[in-house]
Image (cartoon, rainbow over all chains, first blue to last red; front, side):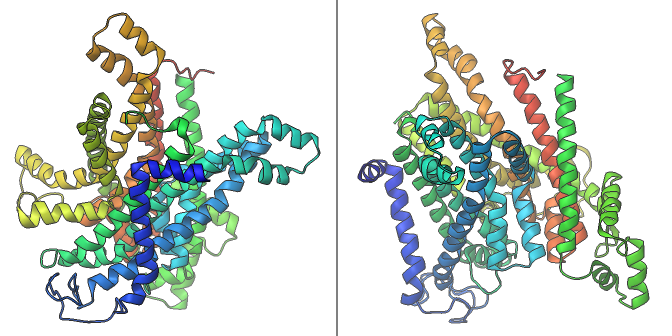
Length: 279
Length: 323
């Protein structure tokens, strides 16, 4: 573990990513306490340009709502949806991949055809259809992002399990009569964890992008403000008020960038063999 | 080769059928009794009309039979009727398909060409300032949501500089023909295609760079160098050709994302393709149309995947599909 942090902190992208993520998390957790302005309430005249009033630093939108407050409250939704939907995708993908890789044969065939099927369907289109049909809410958004993002997890875990299954220590566990689930959970999965962690960090980034795109199209949770919703709402007035679309987009860009950098740092730290060349 | 194509087509058809079945159940999940919804949309919701609709669309029959009717309809390209637009779904999609193909294929060409170019440069000058610059550039584009890139493009090139039109497929009411029309369409195409292309360009840049650096270390490159071949020849003929294989695979995997990106891009730029149609269907809660577009998108992805598989074979002659 110490080793891990050491190599993680040696990778510049990992450090920058961690700093960005910590900042985003603290904004999401503490921001709403420090800035109690409700993002839905009218606080000033509409279309107030940014940097004119110190208590509304980023100006107001078409309804006089505080853009800065929206960004702070939006951080909660983006990070929460990103994390939870990734967790759900892992909960679905890891067992499917583990079973396919461990049992092989017909089980593997069936599970992998099923996975391939989900991989063929255009993911964003499926997410749109699912949210539209289940009605937009934070639950339907998390569910549909998870539905479209678990297949790569299953494939990755399957590959790892396939190669670990033939190792001696796994064979030893089989010989000693351990149950299949015990072997998978205690012997195989812990050793297959590092590439899954790398993938998961990138999945959180993708999930944030997906959530913002859904909200942008008007498929966000109507009770929660999110960055994608703000950009979507500012879109029609972009000629008069550039700031309504620019700032929330920068927030998305920075969070996604941070998570991608963490993914790279994790990759360097956890899979030193695979780390990129040319540095 | 031929048997490989046949095999892949057969597999694709099976997947498509499965998607159609999934679609059928998704329609059933949509809120409300479809007949009542349709009657409401058609503007009359009395009992007799609802009953007529139910009979017309076979909604009074048992579920497996309904499924059979639905699948039979889709196979004969009958994707249902959009009451909102008062037209068959298949016709609406057919009208919009060329614009989407123009947009996605242009974006795909841009992303692949620029991505391979930048990736090659980055790998060639690995560790230098140029490499770092390209890598950062790619990382940033990879993290930007497509809708935001689109809006920033409009803000910069339409609002501030007034160089490019911000929406539509052609200048409305200009009635241009021939070359003038083509130029007009191209002007409208630049921003949407670049928006969609830049995201994927970032991916291909990173992939090309990584895979070229990987191939460079392999023995056959050393052999080529030992033979005294020039650096340019080695880069082009030995490294790039082999390094492109994973890029081709990635292009196939990304075709679904490309379609998803088209939905966003077409929405922002009011580009009259099926992505925009999907958005309109979404706003009006026109489920027949929404799911029709979804089936067609899936079919497009399947076709695109088949093409990438064939291209893969052309690029990499080592692969034999006969077995």
